Length: 272
Image (cartoon, rainbow, N blue to C red; front, side):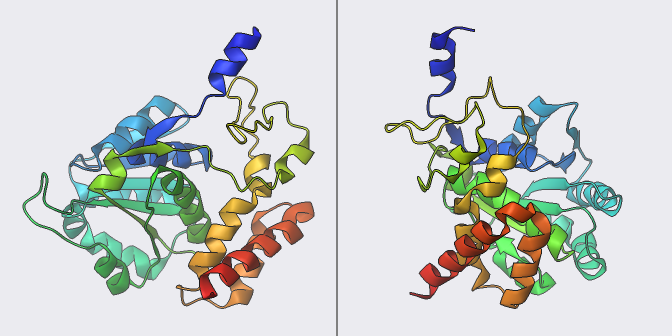
């Protein structure tokens, strides 16, 4: 393996929001992905299909069927994702309300892309109102980096609190591209001794895909995810103790204190 090939794989990657959602789903362990095509959400499932056979991907006859297939996968304990555009959630409203009452087993994320400005739709809708109606959480990324991270966070919240979670995108987030290699530069992950992680002053902490074994240890120790979750927690009607207990159950014991401190720091930032 040449040094040149290693340097090339360490370059910063620009991904669209839809591609970032697909990558986040793959990294977070999604094994079933369904959907119905409709701009601006179509590319999510198309991007997920590159991860077959690790992820089963299916274009369904309509959004209702797509959600029902993902719900069935969740009931078996599998992490699943369903994709659609904003008007598609109208079609899937019946299983959405039913599933919100029953609850998830494996994490389930309903990725809905709103078409603000009606670039390719007959109307505008704000998916936040559906989340409020169904009384389930919604995560709304503002760029590709958040799109990937929020996908993993949404799956984590779904499993911890046994509820479906909506990931709300928009045309501009779904189709714009941005840097996915941002970092808080705390360098805690370097203590793992992983050969795929090497600090670079110019690029931050790019992950060398050729050396990465996919163990996800770096994501468990990464404080940036918990800082984001801490900031978001202040907007959700859940007690702080419930969040803390969820963190204790979802990360390895030696990383619990680090993640709890990061969560508290995020909550403090939002309250300022």
